[in-house]
Image 1 (cartoon, rainbow, N blue to C red):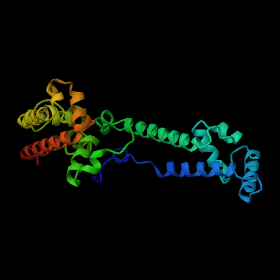
Image 2 (spheres, rainbow, N blue to C red):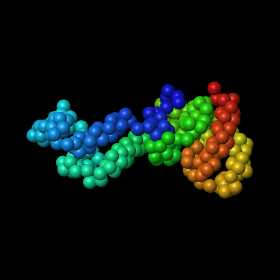
Image 3 (tube, rainbow, N blue to C red):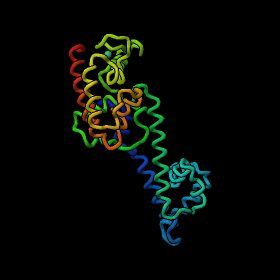
Image 4 (tube, helix red, strand yellow):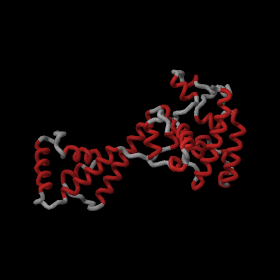
Length: 259
Ligand SMILES: [Zn+2]
């Protein structure tokens, strides 16, 4: 991926968990082992002593091992389990923690995605923190092309204009010289300079997938998601290849007008 690619896009496309999340999981797993230990085990005794001190210090001592276990469980609304030291779900406790940590991470990631203006397309295309198939399937260059369009870090004026400090309305398309902002949607679905390539793209999609016979009549948001987002059922691979072909040809035309 390009060096300029936003952190949220890298994390999102790869479906990456943060190291801190993995550490949290390991810690809770370890803690659940300790509290199930025989009471004469040294580790158990040491834990009990530290726990006592932690409670005495009103649960504020960050140097106490208990602090982070307690804090993590509290953040997951599982504080009561720390207090009672009873794992009501037995073996499934780790699974539950796993799920809650994942959900929390996804929420934080979504909140960050919502904050960045250049992720305007990305937030419409992606809502789950899971690995994207194309990252594995495509070669490096094609992968880069797709990530750039999805993630907003690209050569289109909506992005380059931002670097130059232009207001959003000023970032109009210099290829077709219309008054539309040159953003991802304009590039893929609207710019008249690529009308033949676009018609060809839709034609190939219709040929390939009979269910998409009326693809050109669909709403733009939906088309965008079909082309560079969630795709279409089992035909994602085919659509991707067709779209990448369009992107390549459209960029070739664009280069003739914009240096
Ligand atoms: Zn245009």
